[in-house]
Image 1 (spheres, rainbow over the protein chains, first blue to last red):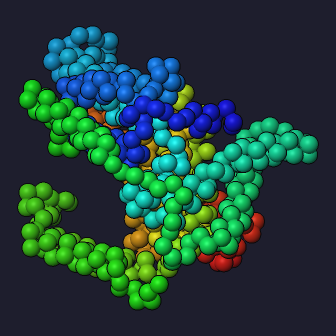
Image 2 (image 1 turned 30 degrees about the vertical axis):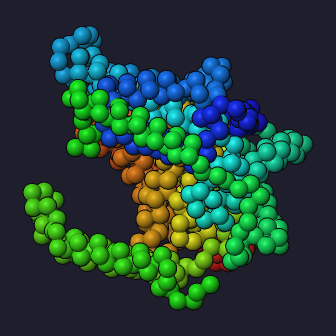
Length: 263
Length: 252
């Protein structure tokens, strides 16, 4: 379980300009680009968006090694989806390769390329957002800049801090159950998961009482230990994201490959 | 704190629903399409009435269900975090399973990603609980790292809404087995549509339909029935005592 969680602590403060942008700005960029790419399936739009994203990558403060560590897993989703479309997609054009019912045609090849590029282009801004943003900064930004209800944002952040504790509890439960002679198996595992859930909710209710005892959740104006600031640079980052989406969509429209996937 | 149900955002939502209903009535549904032999245009008045009354009723029901207390928020957050940890394990564990199955069969495993939505709503019983719990779970899943990256967060939001709609239409009054099953189905339909739109837009319509149907079934069994059983078991431990679901534990 602890091995699974290493992804949670690979973020550190980065000096790179795009990494230091307000999380709300990075969130806006990731949103705009994904919406623009979800609308269409074509190689030009996705390819242009991916190329522009790669061009901005040097300012994101992710070393190639770190980038690979946090993004290789996206390939796991992109490549099978592309292969699947290649083999099972709607056929069209000349047959390039035929094996019984399975056939690879020009039509399915171009949609496979489009889908792989699209998933990569949608995923990359998200990788940068997740890999360069500390959860605390994200919570500050969500509550102060985007004005999401602060009781919910801060409770989610508090609960996120329980992850480490729950991992410890899992070890304790494992040892206790082993001492009592439970052996391994699916039934035992489910029982242990249930026990962990009970412990988590108990901790949650105690945490809620503690937070209320310190005045959390009253209807008084809230003050912030770390004021979030959304400056000119953050606006520029948002505009950059809009520009990437607009250029990619424009290129697709200009070359006539853009097609609304909902239609 | 205001005591009247019609104040601030709630009033705007109710007025918005009525306006939307009026717009539907004035504009009319398209003439061309037909469902089971009835053109959509004939359904204009019923649709407008449904949107208007359902909007006002659901908004009123959110007032009756009450404000979220701190313990509700924190419990929903904790359930979300626990769900996120299950996601992290399931993301890794189900990869060989999903690689072995092609769509539509791969939709069978989708229900596991929907259970925090139903569980959160059943346990906390507040408007928005399904969306919030699923969103927290999906965010943790994305933070830990998975093959879908940040898209997980959007998926979580939309899946949560799929379950939320069911509890909203039941006016946040019914939290028994049928509501749980329908909520699981709602989330399943939504995730089936999302997957076929984003990951498999080029497969044939028949495969897409089968994918949505299988995803719905998976949502009903794993998310709906599973969450209902889990809520009952949690209530029996006494852990839920401070919450609405714990107070009515005998009836769960």
